Image (cartoon, rainbow, N blue to C red; front, top):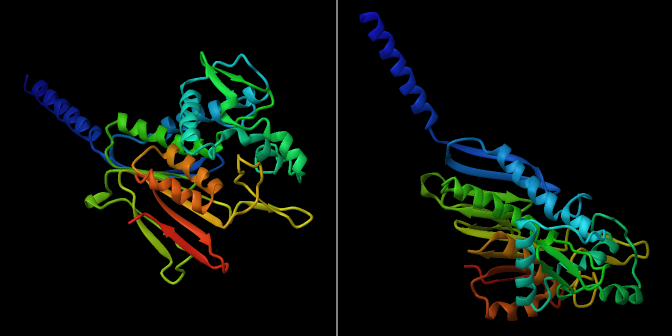
Length: 326
C-alpha cells in the first residue's frame, strides 16, 4: 500500500511539473520571407512558436490578393475570370482601397496595374517606354470607380481594368498577423515586413518599441528615433526603386493615377505614422508620393491624426525634411 501511495505521489508531482512547464511563457523572434521581401516578428510572453500558423495566414493573403501568383483570385480576375467569388481578405482590401481612394481624391488607385506592368514594376516586367498616346489609351482603364464588388464578385466597367493591391496588401498582411496575436491575447509585439511596421504594447521592462529611421537630411546624426508603440508605420519612396530606359529617361515605381506618368517629383520619400491599421498608412504613403509635397501638406491639415516625415528636394536641389511627427 505504501509503495502504491509513493507511485501516486510521484505521478502527481510529475503531472504538476509538466503542467507548470506548459504554462511557462516565452519571448519569440521569427524571421523569414514573404510577399517578395523579408520579415521580422517579435512577440513577448507567449505560449508557443506561431510560425506555422503565420505562414498559413500569409498563404491565405497571397492566394487572395497577390498579382505575383498566377492562380490567386486577383490574378484570375485580371485574366478575365468573372466567376471568382472573392473571400473576406479580398473584400476587406477592396473596401479599404475604395475608402482611401475617395479620401485622397483618387491619388490612391489600385487600378494603375496596367501602367505599373508596362513601366516594368509589376509581375509582367514589360518595360515599355510608353508614348503619350499609349498612356492616354491606358488611362481609360484607370479609376477605382470603374470596378464594383457585387455579391462577392468583381464587376468591371472594362475587362482591361487591372487590379494591383501591392501598395496596400503588405500592410494588410501585417494587420492579419496583429489580429492573430490579439486573438491569442498577446499584449506586446512588433511586426515588420519589408520596412512596414505595426507595434503594440511595450518591450521588456515596459520600454516602448523604438525604431530608427535613416535621416538623409541630417547625415551626421544619422537616425530619427520614433516611438511606435500602439502605432503603424509605412514608408514609400522613389529614390531606390526606379529604372533608366535606353534613351536615359528615368521611370519611378509610383505611378500618378491622374496622369499615368511615372516621372519623379521633388518628393523623394514619405513615412506615415498613425494609430490605425498598417494597411491604411501603407496606402496613404503611396497616395502622398503621387500627390507630391504641397498637396500632401494640404491633405494633412484636415487629417492631423496621421503624422508624416517627408524628404524632398528644395529649389536649390538640396535635401530637406518636412515633418508633423513630434
